[in-house]
Length: 626
Image (tube, rainbow, N blue to C red):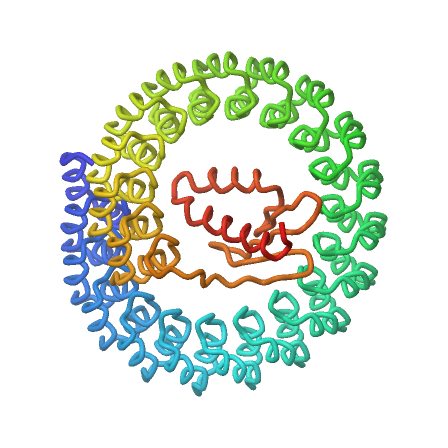
């Protein structure tokens, strides 16, 4: 950001200043000034910004306005000394914010756990950084809100969780029932709880023992049975019975569970309820014969699910590709298992949505993709431009398209020829240049120029590109924008000397990225493991390159899967003829998961998710002797 832009912000109205104060990309000097603003809303925004310099945060922690101090108290970048003082603040809101901050020192959290205000104690009880002894005491608190927070905390000691599982308050027991750290014996008792919501939480917990899940599968409450039916840890015999349940919601959950036995899925595929059949049609574990029948279903939603299932037989997909409903044809067009001849026909479909799906399918034949690259609809051309299977000549033409969205996709495609990427790197639209900057196939000379781009988004993408030359990365590591430096810090190609400096950066996001980088030197990682910021310490602790590293990741192992906690959801890998993964709403192959990780993380740091995937694969191979 240029000085004139900074001056414009500082001289702007309060809304402009407030937005700038909350923006992590605002330069440190500007944030220091905004932290002194006469408007408390602006100061509060600066106080909550993780990019605000430590000195400014220390001053904001002393602000006369409690809202400002509260924001500083919740900021993980606030220095430890300031957090210790904020933990003693006269205002309980401020103390509560400090109590919930994982960067607050252990001694301060121990004191906050004894606070006279239950809101403060509850915040401390939910903080994963709160010491075990303090959590044990909080688990006995007279206020059920506090105990409930302790019951949901994965750091709460096992003995305390066992006691919380017997709590007189159902909200407390409900939280304990959902906690994957709750001991098996306690979960077994929670599975018998008089409250149906407690039992439902236990039924959905992958750590609940098999015997307990078998009993939960017979529960009188359909919500409980439905949760058991969707749990991949539920035993096969129980899933077989749940597949016959009188309630269609329960059967639908069983139909979508990859652990449900083949015979049960075959029966579910004939269910009278279309929602159940639709779920069976989308399940990759559903047998081929059943999928063939589902492909002929009278309901287009069911046929569409079968058309998108990679396990659906080729003959069935060929027929689905001719379906009268365009949604079904579109699903078939996006399925990599659809035969080449069928994809060639789908590429000529009268509906642009169908052609667009065919254009994005890596299995679509080259001749068909060449034609799709000339389509009159820019959405179709855009999809063809992003497809790595699109021929080089077609990509060269797409790189000259009049629509910037099309050019942007061509710029991000690793199959786009070098000459075309060199031209795209000079595009007038920064979105296009940004995509070229992130493409590992972009020539080194072009990346060197993109690393000097006037737009910080472009420089940030170049900083995260492993193909960017070392000299350019060294310069990017000194960039005035913290997001650019953070990207350089996460790049395994960044030179060791630059990473050592980035590990000392004033911005915790930058240090956090360096802490997760396997190329960061051992000495730097040793220091990062002692960082004042808990997120930095956590990243360093999980980095295999950190001296003394041990894999502390916890796994849930079932009869046909291995699961571990991802960044947001549990990630599962299932043992089948073609192993597949599920996480959140995603279900698919390793290749599809990799594409999802990279596409979702282009603006973030994909390396942590890639590491989780690598560790899950390793544990899976050990478990199933692959």
